[in-house]
Amino acid sequence: MAEFDDILDNAHEVVASLFADTGEWFPPDNAESQTEEVFFIDPTKRDGYGQSNTFVKNIANFEVDAPVVEYKKGQFPGLKEAADRKLTQFIEIKGGRYRILKAKAAYDGRTIYIELSKTPV
Image 1 (cartoon, rainbow, N blue to C red):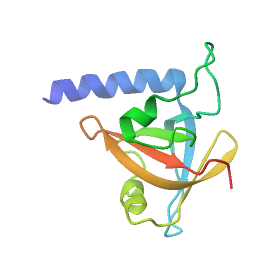
Image 2 (cartoon, one colour):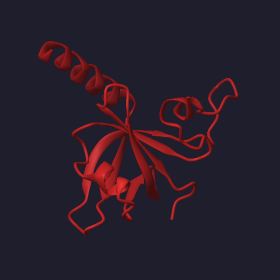
Image 3 (cartoon, rainbow, N blue to C red):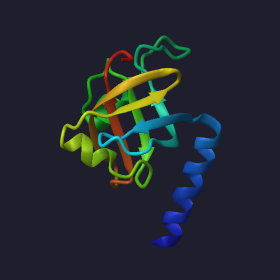
Image 4 (tube, rainbow, N blue to C red):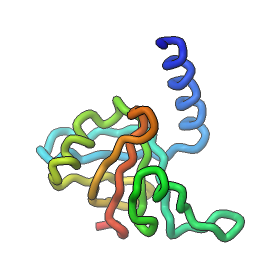
């Protein structure tokens, strides 16, 4: 299984190097912020065909009109647990600071989606 995990990690790194945005997480306990390369999905933006980013709703059952960040398990240790406990925490991405509303693991549990406030705070 380790070989398959290595392939997944390498694929993630390649895709992240091409498409990811830098996200800075501010933990609820005022600990030092953490920066990672993540995928920012903004449903208010339209793709080249006029479609919004609705696929996240099917994966994580999130509101389709809320921005979402996707990241790999192991990044931002403690974020999902703090979201599950409904602690106030923020992420800065693409020039905006968003409140983290909830987090869910998807697929095999190695992908985490976090739903953000609809507008930066």
